[in-house]
Amino acid sequence: MIPMVRCVGNLSLESTLSNMRDAWISAVLLNFCTNGKVGEYECVRVTVKSSCQWIYLDPHTLRLRYPHTLYLPNCLAKAQLQTWLIACWPIGVRFRSGRQASMPSCSFRIRHQSLWIAILLVLGWSVGVCQSAAAEVPKLPHAKPEEVGMSPAHLKNIDAVVTEGLKIGRMPGCVVLVGRQGRIVFEKAYGQRAVSPDPEPMTVDTVFDLASITKPLATATSIMLLIERGDLRLRDKVSYYIPEFSKNGKQDVTIYQLLTHQSGFIPDNADADYLQGPDTAFQKIFALTPQSPPGTKFIYSDVGFIVLGELVKRLSGQNLHEFSHEHIYQPLGMTETTYLPGNDLIPRIAPTEQRKGKWLRGQVHDPRAEYLGGVAGHAGLFSTAQDLAVYCQMMLNRGTYANVRILSPRGVSVMTDTYNSGTSLRGLGWDKLSTFSTNRGELFTESAYGHSGFTGTSLWIDPGLDLFVIVLSNRVHPDGKGLINPVSGRIGTIAAAAILDVPAPTSTPRTPQPVQQEEPANSGSSSADVASEEASPPAPKAGDVAPPPPGTVPATGANRGNTRPLFNRRPGR
Image (cartoon, rainbow, N blue to C red; front, side, top):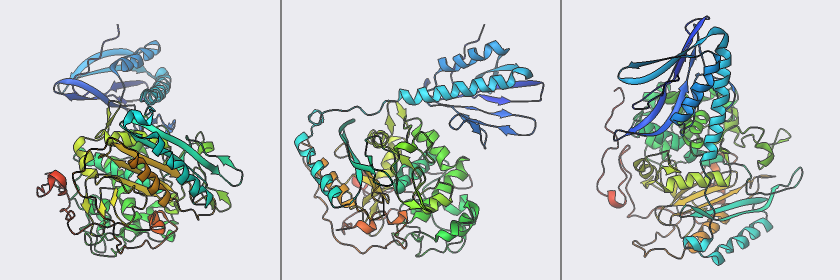
């Protein structure tokens, strides 16, 4: 009889090979317990240990990988674990029950001749579960605009704005998606996905190189997850976790300063610094001298987010691709959001420019991200409009989507609150109101936050209107001369103006004013995402929020005048 596995407390599933004749496999199931009740399962980690090494089976790429861990999906249920145990029964599994540290567990023995059969069974089953788990997370449903308090007639004005942009060559094509109250009310593809070497029509499921939208979606969200776990604090010095970072006046740079572009880093260091591989590239980054004293000036910097990506790797043991996939995109069912897109996505990817005589299609446009292996904190992520809609709704839901929680409500609030960076209002990884906000809708509320990408992508979320607007294009195709940010901003304005059930205003709208901005040094990289397209850059007013001390709650809204630490733990605990 196969024993039942009672999942109360924290269980774990770990496989250990003691020698070549016998193997003990113990399984560990991680789950949440809330108020004494079993909650959602997070993941299962299966590790196989031989006499001299650890072996991991990665279900996403079906190949051996270090560090060796097999992670299964958040929605893994007890019944599915039992299904796996039953599947192992025909190959000679012996069960025994036990208890260790007051936590229930189960383990079983597999004889040597059946070991690899068992591992293949586990691997095949886990891939199936991962795929079915992603399929179980629904995409956002569609609705008529009037069902969510919006005017369908006004939304049709988007057609004219995009048609004008196509006519004057601002982009070869684009996908526009507008969502409100948890439903998609406008989704349309325009123009061409490719014009060279062969024309291809744009489709709503086109996959785009997101460029700097990678910063909030992958890097900043991953950092917030680590903060929520207590692994680091906003006020912590980066040099505590990366000692070699402390060179040349950077010893006091904080994680908060990197997230808000106040570290003093230059926008981009030279491409030549990356030509000898990631290890040498990071040595040269860590040797950089700040352009201005940390915390004194807003300078939009790719370099700072490259460092944050490395920080995620050092704290989690996973690179940004692995960490964000496991903890953000896979749980949300965002199956087409990824670094290093596979061959199955290539036909639907919008090409960007040519490099060395070949069109970039599935290869990151940003050269520094390419030199870092395609996975970096500032660029490299690919996605579709519908996948991004799921992420947007998760943020509007204060960290949860389809019963899957990614961030805590408090984490979302801290990440998207308003921080004064001197000449700009920023969130943690997000733009709020700055010289990079040309693609921000004129009628968005003060709670809106978003970001853009050099390749022609933008995303804005407005909790005050329960609205999000996604505009994706490959404006750099074919010759790098497109200019879509003004178009994206007008689309955002139309979307906000289409809302008919807006509550009465509680504050006076902020008036955009010109401001002097530190320009990126290299307009050919993603740090120039919006600077080259600026028209009337908005700036903070004199009465806006003051810069909070790193690691404190920003003094905005209900928190004004109530600045207090986010976390009480110190480095070296």
